Length: 609
Image (cartoon, rainbow, N blue to C red; front, side, top):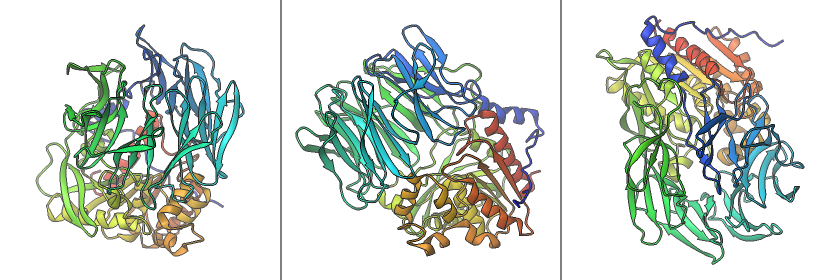
């Protein structure tokens, strides 16, 4: 019989102070919008996602009329959508209760019922979508591997299948070429690129840089007849840009002279690129002239660029935020005028505290961490929460976070560590966790922990570790392998039993894990055992809160139950919160409930309640 685990305590109020209580909830409820995405040949027809209804859903915006309309309305929300190039239809991904497994739906831009977008396709995890006037290409992943489909004249056919990871990446403007990303060489973390002729889907060109060096196709030139493809490469140890002229068989590596890493999109005339540059947790915008090689800054304050694009008239539209200031969607005209583009209805989110940088020497090199202190914090060491980011290939940034802010309101200092495995610090830093994931990252967390204590920031008796997804995995691994460091662990949608997780997770993640661990659990059982939280469950000393979604394909529920069954045999306080969704929730009320449970649990553990 399954154990009835102690349920999480969800308080009616986190704070006794009515102003503080209102402020933290207002940050989550405040309406937000994404940078609008417009139809290729009908730029007045736009879509974006917003939480204005209380659930993240897709919205349309007709710039010609000024009309905004909610397109989707599903209990667990909708996040993935795009438009047809002529602006007549909106495509959105239809999964079941957040399980990420489903099909694309097509709905008229002006309203009307949705219908399956590609009859003949089948359900799966999405693996890319490119919509042209004549050619539509989409990818799905299942337990059998990857399949890519093309639709022409109402007929859908499969043109590619592999037991390895693959996906649709880019369609040329004249729809004669299609770029796909694939891992036929067996390493989905470092993909290769293939370009196909859309007449018969024969290969036109292939490019692979060899072991440990990925190539990521971004997009073809927006000019018809121009067969240049923008690609990310890592030939010099970090992600940089190259322009591959498929027709000519030539390529141009772009040395921008910027530290950190970059990504880019084309200007409409294809004579320049809009470059988003990431360095030490902040991002900035630049224009790179492909003819002259001149790089010029598109001035924005220090913070995070959450998305950016160039309109047909050259206007740059982008999202910006910082740790202290909520996100805003802005537009910078060609004359340098910068204005707010979209203001969602309702009150904006209250601001929060800024972050500062800490650089700490660790076993693998210099570790970058972001540190935030509560406003009006008392002198002396503070209770501290280490919030560990997911991914692992992601990074904490100087961006606005309602989640960070509520921890500060509760009286915690917040430390965010861009441990080995994080992106933005070069390929070697990102790939340093190969063969020993989890434990490698926690060496960096421990080094920053020691700095936080020795610097006087943190009280070693009141340290909490928290994270979601990969961060949740690290949290459970931390309380088991570093039991004397932590007063509490808060793990949301974690990997808890890695062997069982591998058995149940989506095939895309199995391939990722094989590349990361050096094989499957059958190939390298000792590595999976050493790096799995359940191995150390009997060493855990701190109270633990675990949150999990019933329909999560990334960190499935069975392996979490395995961990909790072991934890239940211990004389140790723990709590479990289980909800009906997938890998997290797009419902704001649900997010607030989970956040209240997490912060309340930690406050009790360190004596703040």
